[in-house]
Length: 193
Image (cartoon, rainbow, N blue to C red; front, side, top):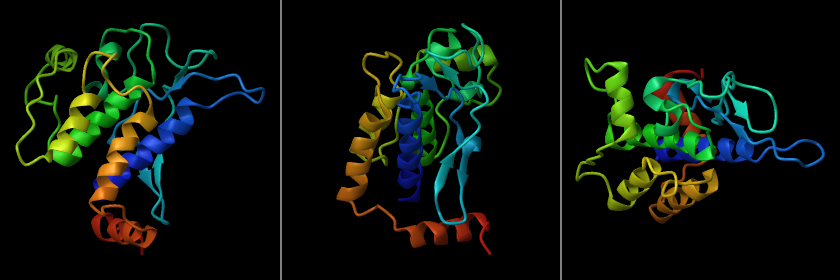
């Protein structure tokens, strides 16, 4: 249940970031571009934080890497990132889908021992997901949609992704309280004295 909580909170952060606007209300069109486990942090109060916005880009402000430059950790790049195409929020959601695969299935869908960068990019562009039978069908469906290479069929917003994930957690009483999250952090990570 903590894995689902972490994913939902990362999606909450992305929903805020993707919909950020200027003081006058103009959308900034922000894309994180580097969503991966090393950029997910935990506060002492049990809050999940998404950090490292160093390669974030905007469709309305001159920030981030140049056009056509793939930035971020290779094994979390979306298919469109590997091709140097224009990014959308769905690009960040792909990375959340990769993290979900890791947390639910137990291994990374595109990291293979000895694979070259070109081989990893080929796996990302044409994923052949085969989820084990121990993955609940509703979770398998969410992972599959998140890791669909066709942008038209992938989640388009963090809210659209978080909805079925949160419903799954609610239906199974898997939504932890703040004290439960704090206890988990303390026991799992040894960060809180």
